[in-house]
Amino acid sequence: MIYTTGTVNTVSGSAIVKGTGTKFKNNNPAINIGMTILIKSGNTNISYMIKSVNSDTELVLAHPALATATNTTFSIHITEPDNNSDAARTMVAINAYTQYFLDAMNTWMTQTGQTKIEMPNGEVITLDSIKKMQSDISNKADLVSKNVQRFEGQVSSKGGIFSLSPSNAKTYFGLLTPNDTDNFGFYSSYDGSGTTIRLPKNGGTMMLVGDYGLGTFNGYIKDSEIANPHVTKFFSISGGSETLGWGYGIHIADPQYGCGIFYNPTLKAIKTFRTQKGMAIRDIETVLSTSNTSTDPQGFIKKASPIVNISSAGTFTTNDESEGATVTRVSQGEYLIEGVLGFNADAGWGGVDGGIEIPLDVNKQPLIWVDSEVNEDGSILVRTYHRTHPNAPKFARNDIDGYKDGDPIDIPDGRFISVRVQMPEQSIYNVRMREMEEAQKAEDERRQKEEEMKEQFGLGENDVLL
Image 1 (cartoon, rainbow, N blue to C red):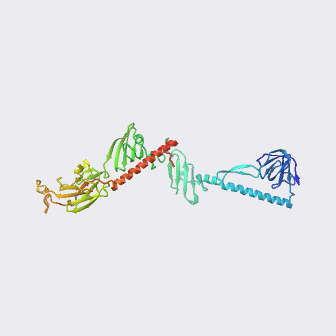
Image 2: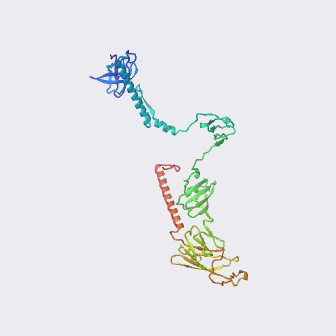
């Protein structure tokens, strides 16, 4: 059978066919999916397959129309219902629609972003793909669990409290609303005992991690920023400081003045300083400690330097700066210091001719004479001799049986001499200091480059370059 009643309109690229005077739905036997429609375009009949019947005046083609036609004739080959030809047509239609459905599902489930799916009636809809929805969900926080219920108890009277109990775990979280006695805040607990974080009633700005150097490893600032007496903060200086060097500190604010404490790892020095509005860092003082001082044989504190302390049997100790130096007892009253480059000139120790401190008795009289010789390789030979005081009272003459004044003798038991030495460039301490300085220089260059890049891209101080 052939159906030709009415005319149709098509638009090139569209699968919709609009009819005039047609009865696509009410026609008997019915027009159905999978049937063939011939639509005249000029002198040619173009063949299409019907995908769906939307109404008496609208069909959807399986493929978009190839040409635009207005009020043109058409013909539809109608199969007889419930016979063999209609069965074949129905099976073809079902197979075609199933394939279309599978293609649409494949598009929806495999593509990213949004996908466009054409419905059986020809309408095109835009859907978020499965991958996009999964990505969106992964970035969302769970609002409530399946077991949301009112938290009954002391906190419930404060309003806005609910409990979450996933997997039978006792986990409570809630929102506290303001009332006469409580601030707005949050309530959370695992066992119901309750921990409340309250927000202040008065106005202000909440601090974040990194504010004033709190909770951050990158609190670098400049001297000029430290000198602002109005800010209390933890800080670091990466280098290039004209006053404090590099290191780490704390600054305490005051309306007009401020003060701080600072540690310089290279110098092992703790410094105190003061700030004043509109002025540079001032009143810098270095705190004396075991890191930057040494105690001589008489117990006096002196500026630290490469020092070797030698005891009677040739045992010795070094400090950080003199690490690597060694001492050998050559013979009675003779001690060879190796791994050094002679004495270190320091006015605090008497210069190159006075780089040795010897023990004194209770009356502040020297217990020994000392002589020294610097060898060509920089090693130092120290000689010690017995020393008496014939003009002193008998108890203070330092008389020792078997020794007279000037005889070679070991350093007295329980006492030591201190020798201030010059360490070579490749000593453990000097190498370590150079490595620290080079690492700090590299950090300075990195930070300088980072600041230049932030300025180039218009980023703020707290923005992070990845």
